[in-house]
Image (tube, rainbow, N blue to C red):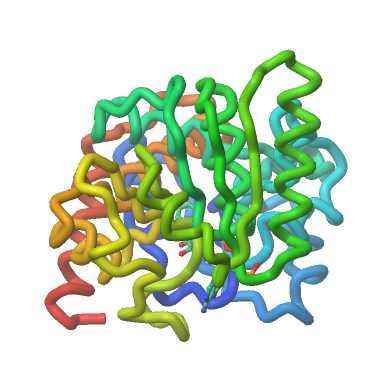
Length: 294
Ligand code: NAP
């Protein structure tokens, strides 16, 4: 019997997860179909209820539901208690268990692709949504000394600062975490003092209202920084082009996407993820977009 895994988000036209997850299931000859369930806000509850059916193994949760979807699960992995954002769900006999594999995906990509050690570094995080939560906790775990969180909606950023400070106090770390509004007069200086700048907004994402936009221009970006754009479609965003102009190092979100997906694959199947197969399917998928085929 074919079983299903759904990708729940809205919009989903930019996503590459179906390409590389299906390639991984096919490689292991598993009778699993990875489906795109584009879910407008009114349909979220129904999509989450569908996950409990016996032919469904689980789901990936993506924007804008990484926080909201937690209202519909029965159990959470330890990491989720801190982060408050989910990207992976498994259906255990009608009970939904939530995980966050974005933290692992982000850290693997920093280690393996960028060879960047966050310990003692200053980081600016652009955005305060589900992905920003995972990135902040990943960096705090790795002893980043300063996190500057920049977001359009103030309350969302303040909530993230509070979550981060609670974590730091509870585990006895010393990191400083502050919020700056998008138009703060201190923002340019904070960015120029950063070793790492991570875009966790949707700005620059293909098929989004912010397509082709960049949250920063070249003359704000320090030459010695790593600029990491979580956006993976397109692979070279306007932000990454600005960072290259500034002479900074850059990393696109594609590697994180595959590493977080590999961790989800292991949760659903209990098998090792075929990373090479997943990377080449993701690259083929992106090449099709680039060629204008989609
Ligand atoms: P989300 O929860 O919906 O958060 C979206 C964020 O973008 C919020 O901070 C939002 O600000 C900000 N934003 C949206 N439009 C904006 C605009 N025009 N100007 C300024 N800020 C804007 O989404 P998410 O799940 O965190 O995902 C964010 C991005 O990360 C997406 O592009 C997603 O594809 C990418 N991502 C990549 C990976 C990967 O593996 N590479 C993993 C996760 C996410 P407000 O709070 O003010 O609305």
